[in-house]
Amino acid sequence: MDDVTQPQMQPGQLLARGVCRHLASHDFVAVEEFVPERGKRVDVMAMGPKGEIWVIECKSSRVDFTSDCKWDGYLEWCDRYFWAVDTEFPTELLPNETGLIIADAYNAEIIRMGPEDKLAPARRKALTLRFARHAARRLQGLRDPRV
Image (tube, rainbow, N blue to C red; front, side, top):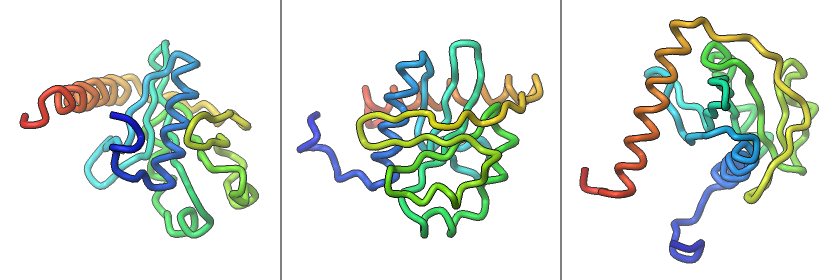
């Protein structure tokens, strides 16, 4: 499918696409709209070549950011946390103790590395299994949408 036949993507989805492309260049795999537990949905969860887990929240505007009060609940689900925004976003709004990625629909750049806070081994194992099953379900859905 080319861009003409795909449904119109929202601004946050375009940022997520650019982020995922950039992370792939660093040997990370990523899934969008991942649910680590009931009631939480992260924009991008990425797994690195050594099993490290990053969460990236994509914010397309000031209103999008200020209306999201639950982001700190995602910190317990990753080794590093990042915001992904475009070049027009007022980055001074973002907490300094989090990572920063500047992105567009096609690529991204890590501006500030999020501090590392390693997951507990039991949580990492459970999250890795959930990540793998989620990714496999998505792939199966692409191959056979009726499943």
